[in-house]
Length: 110
Image 1 (spheres, rainbow, N blue to C red):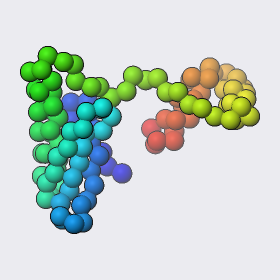
Image 2 (image 1 turned 30 degrees about the vertical axis):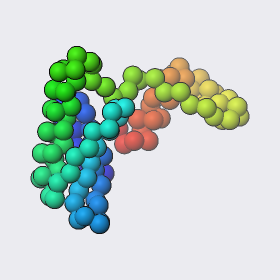
Image 3 (image 1 turned 120 degrees about the vertical axis):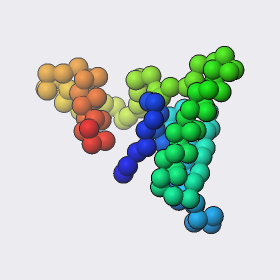
């Protein structure tokens, strides 16, 4: 999977088979900021413009733009799984946070 990035923001891009265009939105923010284009080059440019416009609009409104995620992840898992995770972290000599970050990083191909 390829990801478009610009100024710390990422995009989700999809193909719209009805209109035969590429559509996208800025990922990881509460605001819904969309864009579209007919070509791959066009969608990349439209994304950059959408990010720039979003940041300019936030500045005009005097509010801070949303940033992608704080770094806190809250998960609810079965107690049995929690025990196995805690044991795996301890056996690896890491805190639960360190171990979990490593596992999640590996899962997303980092």
